[in-house]
Length: 379
Image 1 (cartoon, rainbow, N blue to C red):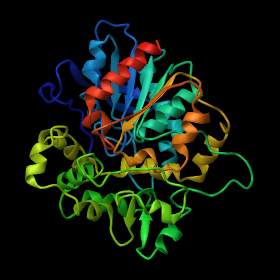
Image 2 (cartoon, rainbow, N blue to C red; image 1 turned 180 degrees about the vertical axis):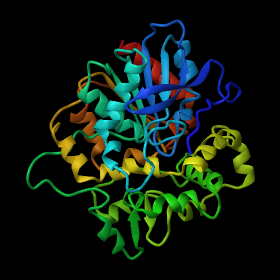
Image 3 (tube, rainbow, N blue to C red; image 1 turned 90 degrees about the horizontal axis):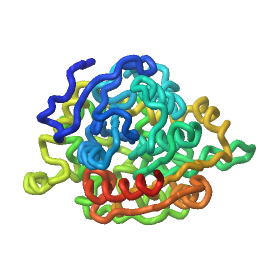
């Protein structure tokens, strides 16, 4: 169901506005903006991940705007109040591929009459979009910040490259004494959207458990490097990454839903903030975001990315994540490859204490400090 109503100002921080931008790669894109006046300020583009929205940047945008930046955060293709994308499982999945998502970012900037940005910042699935943007159009994206998801470089283009990734180890995970499955492989299935959208506990309770389980509030999050893409190694991760074979994601996180007292203590995601997410996902479902996982697994989109095999990100870069975030290590070797080869001008690589996967929401002050330091140094 589409909606053309902006988020009311009283539900946003002072100085942040919600509006729509037409004719963005065939979409009407919903964006949050701060620091939009006076015109001509250097732009910072913020890209969210799954299952988030532009709203995830609400505690970052005012600080960047106060420092003199025009800050733009869209609901990306498949998410929130942005319309003009196909939510059907049998729709064209390749429009959700990385290069088309880079095109979306370029189209948004063109619609805003912005020729280049000081920095593109991406969190979770927004991180590879930011990485690919900086890799293929460094003239437009003059620096890049990757958050929570390391970028190990373009896929190799050579015969005999090892087959790694969620789908490749599915049979190995299924054969473990405790049968498991990789969440990314599960997210490509037809059942995943319905499992979460129409789960027994309801979307709001599902998202509460999902956000909690991947945050520093869940004390079981003690991430470390994994030696390889093997079933035994991958099974060391929590169940929100390596799920029990017989459970869907809603059932998986339901085991860890916090109690009323813990929810009341959650300053970084109080109930009114969570309702901004749950209302959108109750309305839209999750398939728009899940299409991104399907595009990553698609052989055709992989072949497109292999054209850039061996190419590096050569603009100034930084990596940020929570010290309790398993996302740093979920792709064995990517964290190291990012620093050693994929990003040739990495200025900093920082893991922030007191944060899990949702680092800009859990520890916004530390994220703002790191971002502003990087923006000043890369200017």
